[in-house]
Image 1 (cartoon, rainbow, N blue to C red):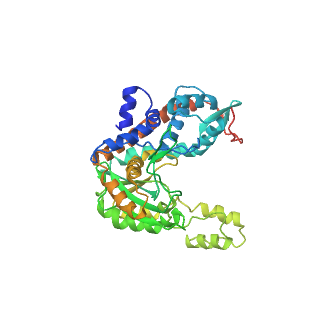
Image 2: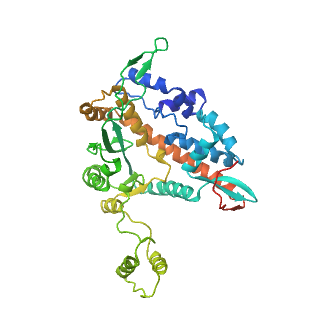
Image 3: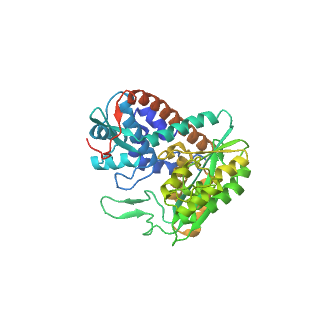
Length: 399
């Protein structure tokens, strides 16, 4: 259990509320802990934009909405907003809530002339598949590896400056303006800690986008040369759906393809399409020979005796490394000198202070979330199945 989780249990309030109320206290606690026992908390100071929630708060929003159906109640925006005030001190307006719900995959559907706020079927299906496959794979695979990348800016800081209320003077370390240069960090871990020799840290070029730096070439090289040689045989490898994780073995036809390309693709599959077929007919024919998406990384993993499992969209909280990144960044924020020459050694230092116990706690927390969501999905499914739902052509939120 995380520190915030223990405090939540002791005070009988939600963990999210403890994180938010105690965000400044958490930073103070970090300075009092020994290096061997860093504070384990995902609490991070977010921007003032109400809709800019972190993944943990988005999960609270999702479970709050589904919780109404679990109790056999119909949620409305106003009811959800009031409950979120209690669960996570949400102070946004109804319009902010609409945007958040849209972002995490909710829409309105009609049943018996009324509108019901429901999770989109593709989001629900992706979560259900992940949870079911995870349960199934655990019976055959002995080790679970969680990987992810993140970044930290040269001028990264959280709550390091304090303003004296009387003198109006700012004391403490004051970061320079702007974000400065950026380091990209790629790593992986298990319940026993970080994977040995899997750390990759490199500086992004200022004039290039992050995803041009962290690309499929970099990721695949790291995956083959640093990850696979250092993990246990017969492992499940959990990752998200980033484009550089999901390069396909072959291009799957789309309607944007030219007729000549569609015909060529079909001929390579052993099909001889008639010359008089229209483009739409060629495309429909091609779809019959398209059997799902197959990815390069999955094949590389399978050839090494492992299995890749991708997180469902909007569910980063299922990856315990998200909590580890929060811990690492809290450490960096406390000690950052805002000098690029010092940043990489500081990142390495922060990573070294993450203990196997931290990883064990993070994995247990992620598994607990998965178990909770699986149970809630069953309860919600029973109630939603009783509704006579016809999909609405109007996806706009109303109340």
